[in-house]
Amino acid sequence: MRFMMLMIPLGYDTAPPDVQLDPERVAAMMRYNEALKDAGVLITLDGLHPPSMGARVSFAAGEAVVIDGPFAEAKEVLGGYWMIEVASRAEAIAWARRCPAAPNEIIEIRQVQEISDFPPDVQEAAAGFGDLKI
Image (tube, rainbow, N blue to C red; front, side, top):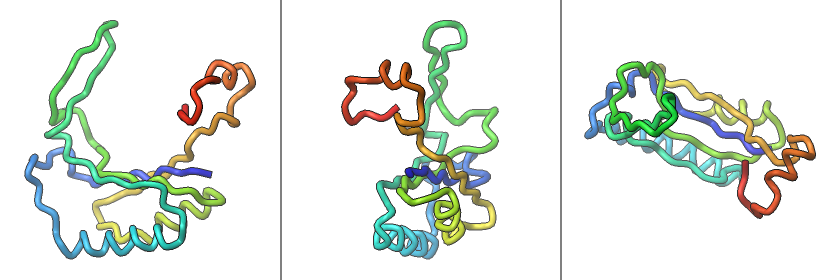
């Protein structure tokens, strides 16, 4: 089972483009990342720049509208993610609990949809895409 662990650092929605990271916290996070890798569960991971450097594309009016960050209505934003492959939701939660997160950080855990999770008609509609995931 694949799970995405989403890091939500509260307050990151207002972080400036040149936000400075604490080297000690980065080192602690790298040790955690290494533990994920050494356990053979890590697929990929990335940190994300703050929303002040991002953009949103909405389609509410039937055409694409681009809004540059920061986003006034944002309350919780992603700071990064890990993609892991483990045997169960409980194991994903156990890994998230080991993260050296700060008091202002939350990790949301979401299971990745696999093609086998869908009924045959949806699987058929997605056929022909090889290794692409839905």
